[in-house]
Length: 228
Picture (spheres, rainbow, N blue to C red):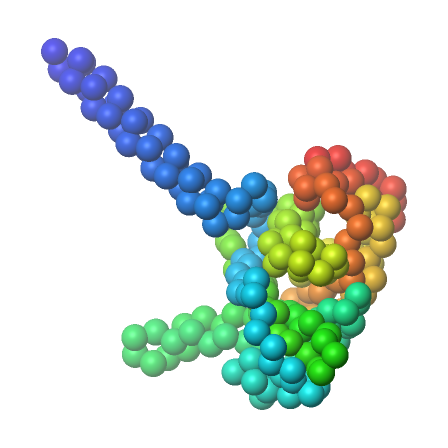
């Protein structure tokens, strides 16, 4: 009888865990639709608007002063315009304090602000934030992190709305400038220093492949191909 009870208890646990996983899957599908969700060392978040009200900022600098509350404490990495969309990349630090007010964690991040070029100036579209190396649940290879950042790039909606897909991420792979995605080269690489460690911001101004990140071919300088 005891064995039967134990089996029933184990079965209940399996059912509960399965139910939780199903709920999580439904939530992920609701948030991201049919777009894949991949994980790497970085943690991404974003906020984009599908219906952009006409703000008509006279310049990108004026727009940044309005939409970026931390602008004065951040370092501008670069500004790129591609197919009528301006991308402004900045680097900053988030300081997290404990309950006693002492600094508990210092987190480096990169943000990309996107602005749409209009006849009277610029309209703000949204921002994507990337916390460098924040996901420490497991060890991720540089390719895992690269693909995760690549998959996040598709979630902004810029590709569907404006026909341009800026793809970017942060890696500790020093030879990232020689990596290609389905034969497309990386356009820009910027060196970042974070707590004594070197990282690299990689940028593809307009990703051409329409494959999912899990299906693209990554090729490095030594021609070692990674098929997913």
